[in-house]
Image 1 (cartoon, rainbow, N blue to C red):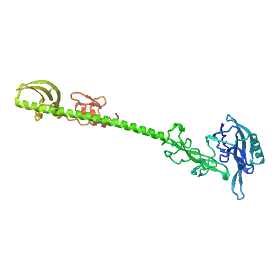
Image 2: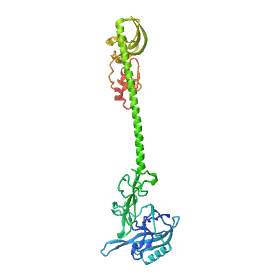
Image 3: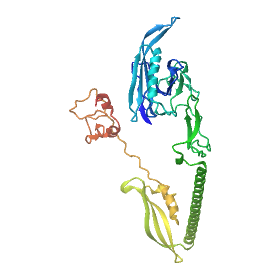
Image 4: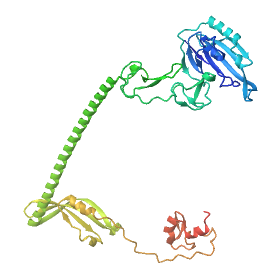
Length: 438
C-alpha cells in the first residue's frame, strides 16, 4: 500500500466540474465519463491505495458561453486530463496528459485508446481497496440533497459531491452522518462479538458502494482495552460491596462517636449537678453556721463599667475562702462594685457559690461612657464677606482669624479649637465656599 496526497484543483479551474478518480477498468460500451471505472477521491485528500494504482486527474475550465436551441446560455468548458502512476513512496509519476478544447470530447476514441494502453501496462488488482486517511475539501454540494449513506439531508456546501451528471450523489463528510443514538449496554461488538459494557462502545458507519451504508456497534479504541459486560458487572458488584463496607464502617464510627459524646455529656451534666448541689449545700451551711472569717484568694475578673481614669467605677469578681462557725471552709465568689457610681448597681447580687453564676452576673453589665458635661460656650464667628489673604491664618470652617488657645491642625485643614471636629470629618463651610479648587 502507498499513501498519496491527491492533487488539489487549481484556482482557475471549476471546483464543481473537476474531479479525481482511481482508474481500475474501462467500459468500452459506455459513453462520456461513464467509460471510467473506479472510485472517486476528493481533491486534497490523503488516501492509501495499492502500489501501481492509476490516478486520473481532470480539471475543467470555462472558456466562454453558448446557447441551446431554446436560447438558454450554458458554459463552454475545456478539460486538462492527466494520468499518474502511484509509486511505493507515494510519489505520482505522470504517464499521459492532454488538454481538450471541449470537455465533452475528452473521452473519445483517442483518449480511450491511451487509457487502455496504460491499463494493460499496469493492470489493477482485483481486490482493489482504498482507505481514506484525510478526506480533503472535495467537490462541495451546490444544493441540499439526501446523503447517499444515511439518507438524511446534507446542507448546501456541508458535504461532498460524487459523480457527474445524472449519476451525481451527495454524501456527508466522514464522521458527519448522524449516528442512531447511544449504544444500548449489552449489544455485541461487531469486531469481537462480546457484549458491550455501558459507555464503552459507539456506532461506526460502514460505507460500501453504491450505498446506503450501515451502522455497526464497535468498542471505543481496541476491544481488548474495554471490559466486557460480564467484567463490567463484576467490577460494579465489587465496587458496590466496597462502598457498602465503607458506609458500614462510617456508620459504626459515627455511632461510636455519638456514644462517646453522650457519655461525655452525661458526665458533664452529672458534674454540673453535683457542683450545683454542693453550692446549695455551702449556701445552707453559711446561713446555718455563719462566717467567722474571709480570706481573699484571687480576683479572676475585673473591668470598668462607668467612666474612665482614676474616678472610674469598676466591677470585679473576688474569690474568697470563708471559715464557718462549725470549722469547715467554703469557697464563694463575690461580685463587687467600687467607684462614685456604684449606687447604680445596688440591685446586683453580691455572693455566689458557683463561679459560672458569678460570671453570668458579671457579664450582664457593660461599660458605658459618660456624656460630655462641658458643652462649648463659644459661638462661631460669622463668615467674612471676603476671604483673608493666604498669608493670614484662618479657620477652614468658620473663617475666623482668631484662635483662642492656638491653631489646630485637623486632617482636612487648619482649624480653630471650636471647629476641630468638623474639619477632622468633612470639609468646612469656609473651604467649600472659597477654596473649592483645593
